[in-house]
Image (spheres, rainbow, N blue to C red):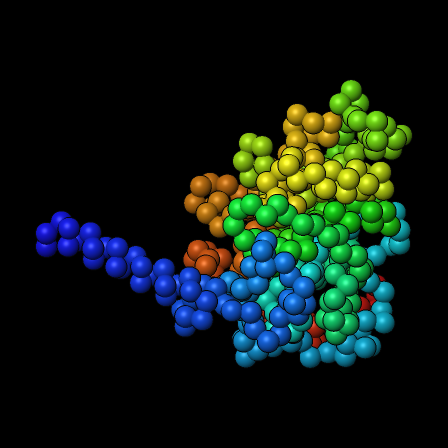
Amino acid sequence: MPRPARILVAFAGLAFILFVFLVPGSPFSLRYPRNDHFQHTNDIDRTRFNADKWFFEAELPIERYPPPKYDVDRLKAYASHNYKGPGHPTFATYFASRDGTLQDPYFLATQQMTYRLLWDPRSRSIYPFTVFVAPFIPQQQRDILAAAGATVREMPLVPFKPKASGGLIAGRLRDMFSKLYMWNMVEFSKIVYLDSDAFPLINVDDIFDQAPEQKCRKELLPLEDKSDTICDYIFSAAMEHEDSINAGVMVLKPDVDMYNRLIRESHNTSNFESGMMEQAFLSYAFSKNGPFPTGVLAPPWNAMEDFPERGIDVYILHSKLWALWWETSWCSNFFNETWRDMLSLYQSPHFEQLRAQG
């Protein structure tokens, strides 16, 4: 085939692939048009956010992932598992999916994280697991998480308006600046935050010791931050690039003055790439050249699928494990197998005895 013809064929093939996989509504699309269950989309700023769903946001089949059959009202009445009252550390995630259905993949992932951190013999912790929920999360979802032993706490939304320049931001990220409110959750002495797609594979309690308290660089503090407490801080994360953290796994110490600082600084979007949302902002707020440098977590604490083939250990696997073909072979059944293990425990008579122990 002559070279010009080969080029035309190649372009035609590329155009077909882009249409099939990227156009919403295509039967093979990686993006899904907003479905009927997607809540609170009328007020979304469509000049900055894209309300379409990607393939990993599609609801998961109930045949493969049935909900646990247990007495939610009875089990949620027991104390949160491992919770010892104010002033103690906690693992935590932030659940802010606007889907609102029981088969929402992020809700299923949050349920599985609850199981992994509280009950799974391979990874269960001595610490509680707190699910910070957005105000719009339905009571039914909150109750299911509480029945499984999670500590459920509502956090208000922290509004954020990204710069209009640049492309549209994925709609699922629109509420992520509300993570900043964790610094105001002074009920807890230290928080290990995990994205709902950051799955512990082993016991990861040692991560609390990987993030010691640091002293700020007082000479770099503005007048607004000259409080007595703000300089003694904890913030650690794995680095995605030299000057950028990955916000999927973080260790932090709640502090009201630090919370006020973060809210104030987040209003100046000229200091960070607002299209990368809270991850870019936290990279700026805790930059290595600023008054509060990030403590660096080793790569195994926030690992990708290819780490084993690169000879790197995996403690917490940061991957959308429910999106089966997205995964590499070594972890392709992790989500399914753990879901079955979870159901087996939750639906056994033994589980209520465990819940009654608090």
